Amino acid sequence: MKKFAVVAAMATALLGSTSVFAADLEVTHWWTSAGEAAAVAEFARVFEEETGNHWVDSALAGSGTGANPVIISRIIGGDPMGATQMNTGRDAEELIQAGLIRDLTPIADELGVKDFYVDASLLDPCTYDGKIYCFPVNIHSWDWLWLSTKAYEKIGQPVPKDWNEYVASWPALQEAGILPFGLATGWPFSGIPGVLMAGIGGSDLVLAINRDKDAEAVRGPEFRKVAEALDSLRQVVSPETMVPTFGDVGTQLLEGTAAGNIHGDWLQADLQVAGGVPGEDYECLPALGLGDQLSGGGDSFYFPVLPEGTDQAVIDAQTALAKTVISPEAQLAFNLKKGSMPIRTDIDLSGANACMKKALTFLDKGLLPSGDFALSSDTQQQLQDLNTEFLDDDSITVDDYIERYASIIESAD
Image 1 (cartoon, one colour):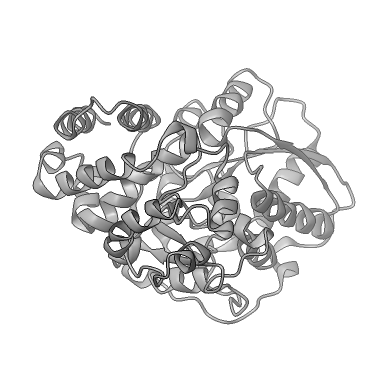
Image 2: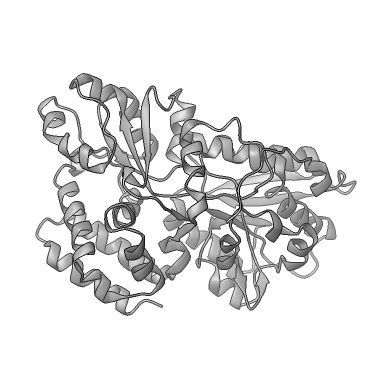
């Protein structure tokens, strides 16, 4: 594991001079919340200013679950975009196997990416048969507990320091008419079990399940604690209290109408756009305030193989964008607004907010493999379906949940 240096590098050396032959390059992504939109605009800005090409923005709704099928179908159907953002993981595995994703190894070798990535393992999900097919652009982690300062002021209690103190505060919050846990509909619940598994179950449990596919670990006592915590959580949320998006949950936290939320660090981008200040308006607890490691995931850029006869200027623009998204200037500008940790070791992070600085202290111990990294898309979908069903149906017992989870891991690839 490498440490971040506080040295600002010049982006122009990486990107090269502005191209005389500018091209339009369509870029698909699912960054549509206020904070995400502000962040991706930084990539577009640096790309256009430094290369002279034009970023054609094609934002897709629905995060990975809704956008991935659109992205994949376009590539398979012969109508590829110039570049696309997807989760760092196995979502593009079949596209790579089919020869539909551009090999970035020559660019990686030219730039020496393995020398400046903060954790070389981030490139593992991008590597197939020894070649690199995507560039991770950030380190995101789901493993955060977000707490509302205003909510705890209302009940006259200090903001909790960890998950256990937070759970103990639920009765007082309910008595005051404050939602203990804010939750958005749809996919945001899918990340919560993994956060509980890392924070409550511990690093060894995450490795046994996500990396080793050990179904007996699911049936063991540590995972039972996780399932019981998830059961307790579903008792304090209900469909009528859910809001449309995770950004709406951020508003609840700032208003003090909800006391807490488990969500990835991209939530702080929306909190920042809304004027929230960590340590004043909200608190952020990595690993639920219990653990000493974070699961590592994030976003990567993939570059589809373009149809025969495509103008060389467009292919050159692909190359320029691949270099741009991991350049020092773009990495700093993007990640400070996205709420994620940058992948480079050689940029000045003195402007990072309190939450990012907390996250950086966890990197020395390495990253735990998230489900995106270690599990196929099919397995991820099965687990998401189970988690959603468990949330919606109180008749599914903890024992049922554990056994069904174990069955999915037994057959995971």
